Length: 74
Image (cartoon, rainbow, N blue to C red; front, side, top):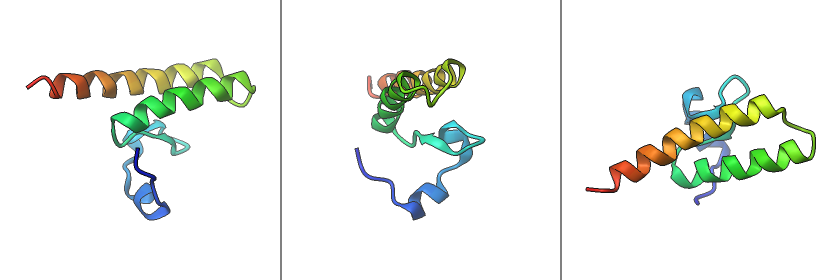
């Protein structure tokens, strides 16, 4: 997973974030989507993220991960 610099992050459309209104949990690619799911679980465990926000992040990440796996089938 490539690190996202501040400049790159500012160019990512809000629609590619797990929480678009807050521009948190960026998902420009498959590896970032998987990472967003993992970080969301951690934040719920720490009490810093609600379960409903985690579900939104998971839903968006799952869409991206499924789309990516279909695209790679040939």
